[in-house]
Length: 283
Ligand code: ADP
Ligand code: MG
Image (cartoon, rainbow, N blue to C red; front, top):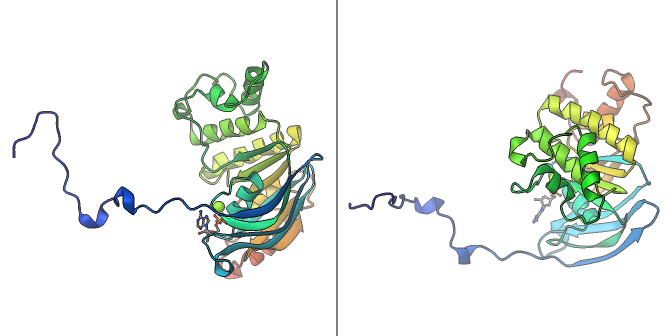
């Protein structure tokens, strides 16, 4: 077969693995939200009777089933739940980022809310400092960005590109970006889920320090029971679209996994998550 120099002949495509034609891709789904959404001035979060359902039908499509939740100003709450239990759906509802879902309920959140996701979602074509200050205006924005980067241990990396950073460093940038907005509520959806175990432990220390300094209310979604106990004031377990368990951590000072109170809490939370005793790693 004659080929042009520099031009590749089309590859053989197995009909079963072909990307569907454009017309075969379903249109984006939009939901209908009938929420009452208000802003609190005292930094608290109040959620009442929150229902969320994907797909057109109610009933089986319901992911959140009349959920109630309050978070005090400056309180750190961790939320655990099996995969698919609706943790991210709840977080997106609080962030006002749920346009593809049906639902009702009342949501009151503070005015300044920041969100951190598992992937850092940095713009690859913008330098680190520009990622941190993206969308903000004002004479002090740059200075604040530099300050926050120093707080997360990235002083001097302002002009780096995101791809020059490790995964842990990218999450540090994402934390700096959330803090530069001085949030009264920080929503974090498995922010350390993609990091290796050692980096994760260092990030726990960093998040605790940042929390102590800035005192936002925090809602941290995690599937790591120890992470929840190490970081939070209160841990919630989500099951079947409702809150199945609420526990106060109540351990002062550094939280040591070897502390018997830590082990008790862990056992209680694992039981609520439906992990049988025989499947738990030895302590
Ligand atoms: P979690 O974060 O606890 O793992 P999610 O809130 O992401 O759970 O999802 C809860 C349930 O809702 C899952 O069964 C999931 O498949 C479904 N779901 C989540 N997002 C969508 C969506 N955009 N469209 C349809 N179903 C979804
Ligand atoms: Mg999730």
